Length: 293
Image 1 (cartoon, one colour):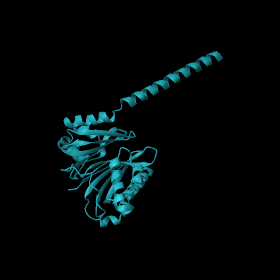
Image 2 (cartoon, one colour):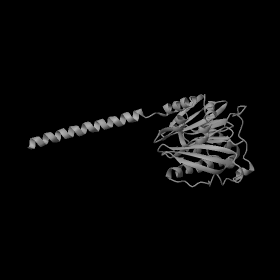
Image 3 (cartoon, one colour):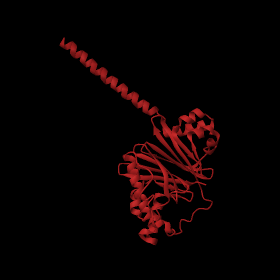
Image 4 (cartoon, helix red, strand yellow):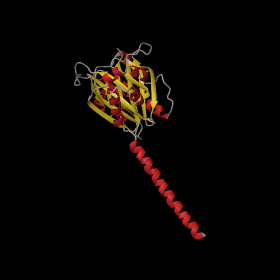
């Protein structure tokens, strides 16, 4: 009887091990079969080219926004109602560069229709979905980067918003961390501090505006030049945030904001920012804006 029991026990152990191996293999295959960002991006292009509204809808986050170069905003529902316009805007692209942010957000930068674009994709339970598509005008004449930065204006002497306060209350620790980094960066621009600003910007950071496309190193050099020419009070904190939203994707936070020189006047720009935490603190990884005209 004892020998029979041991044989049954051994058979059970072997069966359990085989079942565990099968489950692990199934999970691995399921993960491998999940569409990658690049597959999702291509699927969206194909769906737009074919006018497949159902397929497009599945590849857009429910909070998706398409922001034109003039600041006009289209929601997901509006995009689906006029799919041809959205499809025409996304027909081609050159100088396309993609960066993966911790497997949670994908940043795509490039040029199409004589405009820069910044696309953000997010990893949702449903898979990769487009979160925001932003177009930014390209200036008719390339800026003279060799020219020294101008002196601060009278209005730059004070920076309550956005250097000290914002019209938004963080909803979780990730948003709190991103906002704390935002305040630090704004103060480093208001009182030029290139070393500290660089420490709170991701190596992949870029600033996109209707004036220029500025990588991290160039931004740091401009802050150093401002401090050299005008001292510690020689910078600008930028325009005030009139309204904003934040979206938490684990170790990546996306910020969207309307901004203007006067907090009570109509906004003059729509702004998109990305913050991430690679384990060494929250850093900015994208700042992109277009003017509202």
